[in-house]
Image (cartoon, rainbow, N blue to C red; front, side):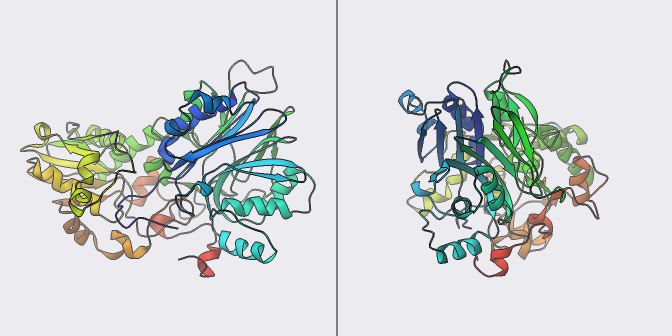
Length: 479
């Protein structure tokens, strides 16, 4: 995994989207990827199938840049397509690492789009290279491609199940084949999300099926939400409809809790819960746990907005937009000098002096990773005239790295792993600092508190409780 030294926030996961049995499938896929842009801004790609041939287009950049041309979309014909937004956790920013990956096999072509991280990718890669497999990228996704290639089974479905039983990690993926149609799969614990939808008007037809990382991608194309793909489930979508396969059996459920806190779009529904409503409940819990005398509640846009609304409602304090976000700042801005680099936070966020001046402010944000961004935001609010700045965080302290598809730094770079609460408060220059408790977070999800047994979510970045074995780390094949 990699994490830029200058960054202070967790990086997004990837987004996957698939269409089967709908005219202009690539155009719909591009729209779906637009809705999933928050999950990755490095690169985007689409592979389509027209009944005879596969077509692909992928490049570095945002979806609008990669698929903004009608000529590009016209070059992706067919009623089936899968797409991918990338934010790299393994592999760097290179075209060779852009998905979907397409490969020709003895049984025909196959394209794969993958979200998440394999915890035994390096171990498997080492073994595959010894067998003579040649890798063209640094992505763990290519491990899956080679496992399918060397499988002794005949069909793409059986080969995919064979590969699935050898990989470990947190993932959701979509594949496209000529004979078996579109397939979707979630890891055995369902850490990463994947939902099934359908276009209206296809109830009596074979097609119209959609797979997506989040329900917000269904909304943009007018598709109806059908259900979540279950943990460990493989769905096969073709002319026979939707068929489910269960290669792992029932091994539990550990959906990533950080999807609710930060990653998912607030208008999505994940595991039956509205992300927006969960975030507002988190804010309410936070107000009950760590209320402080203040004049206004201010979110750090954008992920802090729903929780700040919940905090304001519970506390009875006014909710104000004391920080304004510039939505037109990309990740590729050139920062040639230290002076310009230090102004980076002001490019993304600006203080609203008319709201902040002379006020005691409660700032609501989703997390503190390194603490550098939090310090800059607190200082910016103080410079705008705030009398006091109280930071409230809608997650527990991030003390452990994630190995399941979220690009967080090692423990030595995590502020909460190295410092006490008071030391963290001093580091970010706040008058007070509080994080939501584990029990408060789980109450917001509808539980009585954090389950002692039979955990329902993965919270390893806060607790250090890793539900999936870290094969490569234990074998010291990753840092």
